[in-house]
Image (cartoon, rainbow, N blue to C red; front, side, top):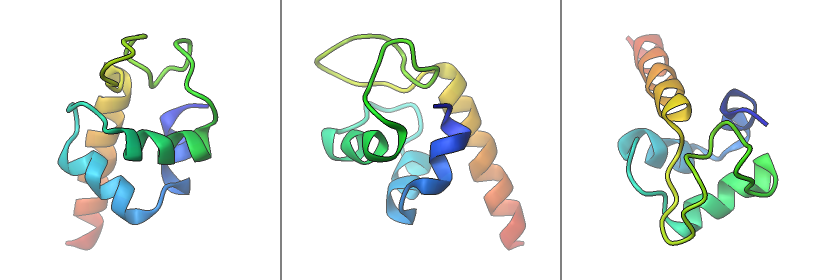
Length: 78
């Protein structure tokens, strides 16, 4: 599942954390929430940056998508 598919399924506080910390290591509680809507974490998922088991990072593609979504949401409030 792509980020654009699971993004609207996340609760607003999780989306806000991802916007505020875009590109940072994703903590287990946030990753659990993503997996609850996107399905199990697999290295093949386009939003996964690799298979480092100690720290989870979103892919560059997902980071860019979240930045665009954040900018679009911000402009909708203006």
